Image (cartoon, rainbow, N blue to C red; front, side, top):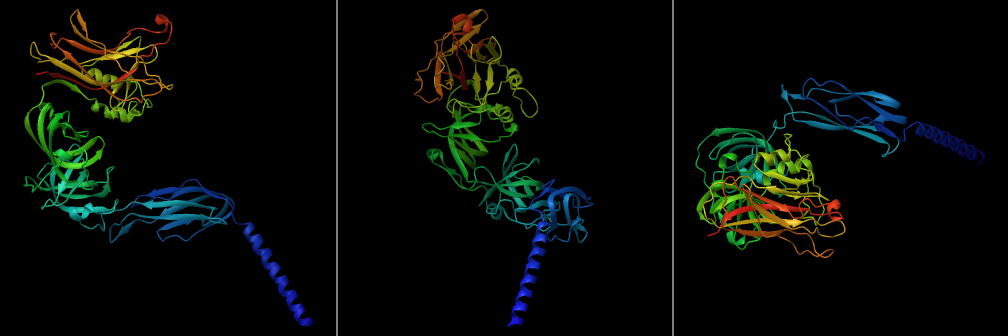
Amino acid sequence: MKLINKLFTLALCLMITLLCSCSKEEDNVARAVLSSTSSLNFPAQKPTEKMITVYSDAEWFMEELPEWITVTPTTGSGTTEVTISVSENMRDGSIDNPRNATVVFRGRTLASRAEVKVTQEGDIYRDCKEYSVSDAVSLEDGTVVIVPNAYVSAVTSSGGMITDTDAANNIYIETSENIKVGDEVYIMGTKESDTYKLSSIICDNVTVLSENNEINYAQAVDITDKIDSFTSDKREYITLRGVLLNNVITIDGAVNSVSLIDVPEENDLSSLNGHYVIIKGYYAGTAAPTVRIVLESVVDDGVSEVIFFSEDFEWLKPWAENSGAGQTVENDGSGSAPQIYSAKNPEGQLASEALLARGYGLEQIPGNAIYLQDCYLKFGKTDYQAGLTLPSIDNIPENSKLKLSFDWAPMVGGTRKFDPVNIIVSITNGSDVTELEPIGHSFVDTVDKLEWLHAEIFIEGIEITKDTRISIKSDGWGDNKDTTGSSVYKRWFIDNIKLVQVR
């Protein structure tokens, strides 16, 4: 019995010693580990080593590494300079696929670790499979693809549509290469889905194999009567009839309109403005109230109305996107509105310069008060009024009866009060100025929601020549707190200006 007690006591002492030893060992392992970077990238060939710093409150250790990565040292504490290097990414004398791994500097727990993602460039097409257009459409996003032969069936300013010989499936390709309808092409790129969940290939390389091939188009689906309800999860070949204006097609009685997207400059359709057209193209998604189509062909189907001037300000999109301009009307009075004198496009041109270059007159008193929206204009601020003079309009026959129309809206403030603004259209011929009837609104303060209003003004008995100036401004021109005794609010928005002949 005494022997058993002695053995038990000895075992207990040994256990206590081991526990104390483990405790001391754990005390030396870091509770906090940080690194000076979370990612490193190396070229495939001739990679040079890179230095990072690892910070810890005690000792850290390395987790297992792939053989192509070397880390020195593999343990440390406090502030440690660590060198990370990789071997060349080659296989059989050629660059191999890209590769990546995570380097882990480990402390005591899962929370006490620093991770550095290491990537090395490579040839993404090294082991790439070849796909038909039909196969590529259904691939996972991010899949690297080679399409060895496809046919260009429509062209945009940033790419085009491709199809198989049987036109069973279509996919959009994004490329800067100069391609034409009828080209047979070899494509290398990555399959993605766009905002509308429609398949695209972002191309790294497009090679034209042959030209002037006949395209076997499928039977186009007519969506004229179902434009308000039509949708699809693929890029269907469709057709419709409507009235064209500035690459937008409207259909009588429909809520939705059609936008022809990214039409190349060489395919200028301005001569068909105001005409009925029959178009064929590829469905490119719906952003109500707009159905987007990649244009394949257009047929003139006769004049709907004679248009002398039209402006939808869609060309201001690069300025709006680059400056963060919002849509205040659509957002019930809320939205960013940079001045046109500060809003620039990606090339650095001011929106004010672009408007002047197009022949517009910028009317404002006592100073700058014209603002950019996405894609329309805002005028005025407290005690400042502003407006617009249209560019010179030519070739209007004498004694023409005209209709000037535009969409407009007053501003609504944070207190939900609508600005008491009227819109004045004036026509100037030399010293002769004719002011037309004011255009007002009936929004109810604190009750109504801000929305667009449509204005139409008929012009008859007034000569319009290239020297005539048509201005659209707010009323109370020049009024301010000093002249009226209280602050003056004449803020408003304009879009979709059009001057047509009335028959």
